[in-house]
Image 1 (tube, rainbow, N blue to C red):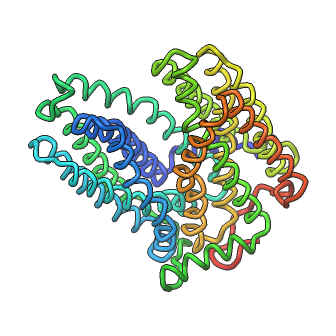
Image 2 (image 1 turned 90 degrees about the vertical axis):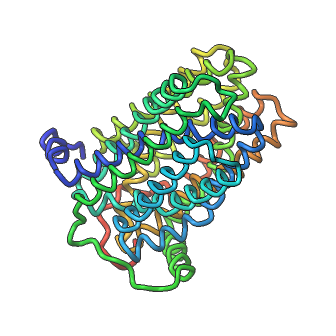
Image 3 (image 1 turned 90 degrees about the horizontal axis):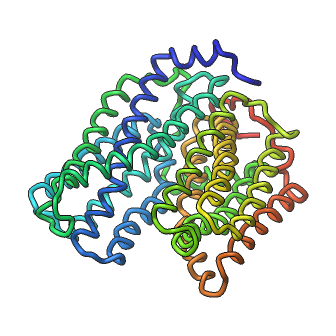
Length: 430
């Protein structure tokens, strides 16, 4: 049902939601500074792309491994508590990195150690953040709230890199010398300050009285319980398996093949920025549409999602034939709109379907599918590109997505997935 204007106004006037949204926006903007500054710091220190890849792996692999543990702790100790601790950890780690950079005491072993700490902290903050919203807003406002939060993330991902780049460029003088890294140190310091600010805003967020904790149990047993709950739910099991396979095959094309396409056909880095900007703008449009017109469906929610995937598959197949930046940007705008619309709908479906005391574990499994498989997807795509042309890769990925959506519709319960009502606080999902 489409949210009425009074409902949207009521959400934006909700002090609880405003504190959460403000803190999220500040934190997401700060994250962009580190996303730009950390790779630049590593390249400034070493000039070695392999070292950069190793730093990113040190951050990403522990996050993928421990995100399931994070989900179990979220259910046991509450999303707010876990989120708060992760923000304290990030504020400390980034403050330390900033001081070391500004004092010219930073070394690569220290960068590896701090990258590991940041990756571990994100393993706990990600499931906490995705599980917290249902305990802050009313159930009928959840899809609108998800749309606003996700749209804010897209906006910060557009503005943040620009601000970080300007700061680093105008604060340093010689990009090859660690002595001229003042801008990098300031960038890390600003991100640390944003974490401190979100600690303050998060203190002012009140969880609903209905928010409860899961029964205490060992982490591995709690994780197994979350996996078992997802497996027992036929629709969720089918959806998670489908999304995992699709992420593994199609996600790699977006990570690896798009930069290669920009480099070989479209004109280089500026073209890649334009193309990815088109995707971000499309995502924003799709998220906005999903928020204000939550009843836009082709039959059931599952049928709508699969139809959107089939359309995305066709767009990917067309991507293999583009030879200008404007063509690629137009197609990425469409892909972004489909992706943004689906993201809001899927997050809301999971948050409403799963009991609150299982939500942290369920969201950690879902985020593992999206984030944990990314390095493997990139590796598989890189290997395939030794044997396939760009056109063949995009056509193959698009065809796989198209056929996969058709098979999921014909052979799995995904086609009957419907918009979930709010789950009970405990017990099994339907």
